Image (cartoon, rainbow, N blue to C red; front, side, top):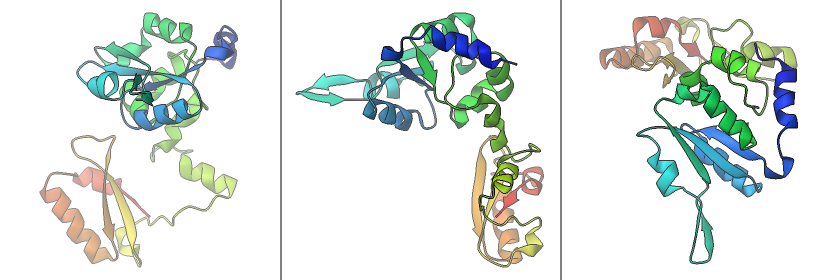
Length: 214
């Protein structure tokens, strides 16, 4: 487990006048970079080879006809996303005063365990809270919202309980870390739509059993 004092030690070496926002080149990376640029920060995007064109070409920061275009100042291209755990890459990010902003893809491609135990680059927020997004974690987001008194949608434990319009979230068959969504307003509609997704191979019976209905 990465200790708080280890991260603080890294931050103490940072030049606060040259902080840069780092992000994995996937998911909401462009939105994060846009926000960072709006706040006056330079940006670094870590990409996987073959997926860097969006950031290295189309959204690369540049000046054209007197206008500032793009939101990505620097791109680091790796063979695999998980290669960012390499000490050399981490050292490069720290040397550039990178403050990493996590998103869903970072958690999927790098993993919670690695983020908690190996990735010694400062992260915006609490790296140990990232996993609460998972529904099968005991103290997940619903647990925290309940403890904090924050209202959230009613959860139905069984399709037979559906008595209003609900949103069903089931793991995709091909990508278990992504979810397939469908709406249903009755147990019968739930069964019909679930059967259609099963027939198309978009979800599995096992995934349907783990679906969240809210």
